[in-house]
Amino acid sequence: MAKFVFITGGVVSSLGKGLTSASLGALLQARGFSVRLRKLDPYLNVDPGTMSPFEHGEVFVTDDGAETDLDLGHYERFTGVAAKSTDSISSGRIYSTVLERERKGDYLGETIQVIPHVTNEIKRFLEQNEDEVDFMLCEIGGTIGDIEGLPFFEAIRQFSQEKKPFSCIFVHLTLLPFLSSSGELKTKPTQHSVKELRSIGISPDILVCRSEVHIPNKEKEKIALFCNVDKKNIIAANDLETIYEAPLAFFKEGLDEAVLQVLNLKSKNEPDLTIWNDVSSRYRTSEGSVKIAVVGKYTILEDAYKSLSEALIHGGLANKTNVEVTWLESEEFEKRTQTRRLNKYDGILIPGGFGKRGTEGKIKVIKYAREKQIPFLGICLGMQLLVIEYARNCAGLKDANSEEFEKESKGSKDHLIYHLSKWIKDQKVEIRDKIQNKGGTMRLGAYPAKINKGTMAFSIYKNELVSERHRHRFEVNIRFQEALEKSGLTFSAFSQDGTLPEIVELSTHPFFLGVQFHPELKSKPFEPHPIFSIFVKKALEQTRLV
Image 1: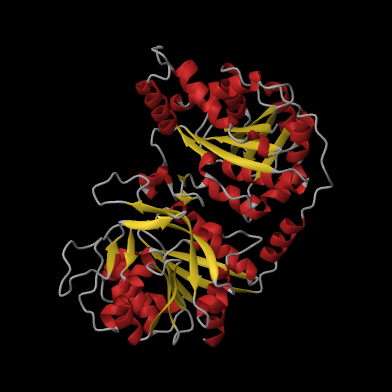
Image 2: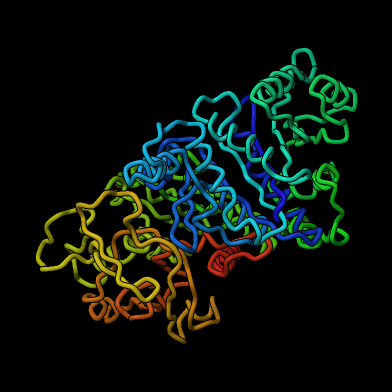
């Protein structure tokens, strides 16, 4: 049976519960334990798939096609354990399930209440596949005291009472603010947060205290006294140069050791932190730097592209190079003179996105990168716009466009980019139409792609068959493949049935690549995705040419 670690947060949000959970998972793996990480979100959306990136940041996609919170990306990047649809739940999904069961009569006429029906559903979620791993790490979204989070806190309280002794542990993350005017760390917010947690029946076993300065022993002793937590279980979480030093920092503080002691467990082996020491060393011994421009429509919130920004860092780690990312708003480039700003960058990337806003600006950016021979990577919508730009300016298809941006196609029966209504997943035909609900109706999750030999794509992957994750509704129309290839664009990879283009490239360019999938979702600091490794390498070569 798995041991359960519940990670909660207090005082303010965005303290780093996801990073703490991911780091703890990595440390337990280093001691020989198997782990799985899960996220329980109190919001009423069924999943984050239809939420604006400005509201909730990136939507992370799992291999089995679940749209989840971005923290699952942290979990994968730190542990290498592929997340599943069973690793993410929201209040919306919990309540939907309870109400569906009530409609079916599963509750035999009972009055449906938060306790026990909603809390029982949460506990059923927690128990899924618990025999598969040594540790199940469960992060509760939001902060203690949030009204919408109360059913989750009550559920984990009940869950811990129903399990055998030494089966569950509570880790609470709080803020220790530093007042520069008085030069003091204030422990009162942490005390109040713990008081709030204890008022609903949960006593934290370990406190992780986030602070921008060193936490002296005196303050740790004070927190231990007033919060009724052993001093050795007061763990400092100070600001770091890179998040990938967090496992080493938490190991130094003894977080993993504290978890094992509370659960009365011994380590399976001596901690092996080789990969994290290597990642830290690569980061600290960077030998150069490259400037990458990311042109998108959600760039005022970096979390909207969280996996992408991390994958670029991983590409830098692979090349022992510091990657300086500049986030540029795509609408700005719809002005005639703005593309000149791009000549100071060593590489340009256009990420995925939805809707027409800013697309003409992105097309101008792609044209500039193609003509100026600047390494370019287009992801998902970025690939579709690459094809549109090339069709308009090189293949004579001046009216080329996407069905997403215009309803009627000019001068041709078909759109260059069309709405996908049918595809094959797991040997079954998936069918969608344009009037369906938006949530979960895209081509989602991992699909295989066949790569043609002799292409840049094959030289990157060194494999004919790869699996990558998708999240999109529109595809490049292969009816235009012949016209595009005659003008020089190469279709270098397709879906297994040969109907859906997966990668396009330009052989006369140092690096001009478009991918329909999201390679950033599978990149890790200790295993950078090859596309990002080569993209950064080509950008680095660009700096040496200047």
